[in-house]
Length: 173
Image (cartoon, rainbow, N blue to C red; front, side, top):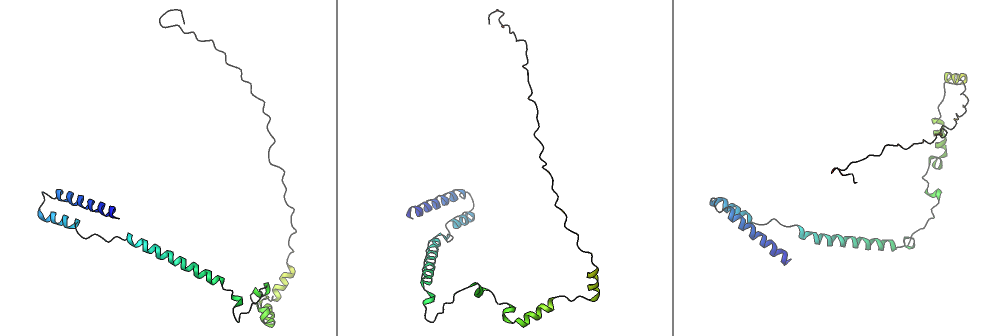
């Protein structure tokens, strides 16, 4: 912390020196304002609050874990006056109208079935029966057979060899 503090002081001294040199030829008012602003009060640094906040968060997590462990270790079935009821599928099912009031359930069922008028009943008697189901369409394999292409034969191209004469005129190569 001391090294950081002295480094910051050195930087402040350098900034004040540069500001003094920059305002050397300016009028007194500008120089006073610049120097006053540099040497003025620093803004509060919030970095010092991070460590206590981290410690508090860690303490909250540890306390929560400890409370959860003690809560889990309590056997609720052994508490005085506790009644343990086995849970079956029937016990877990929500109550229905039929289980609560069978007469009401019968009346609701009768009321929910639609009553047809005479014209609707006559129309249903004249209705054409549904068409029979059609057979499924089946298609053969659409993959073509492998093509049989004969191998191509390439004959070498024959050319007359090039003869180069030397530049110096001698017949030696």
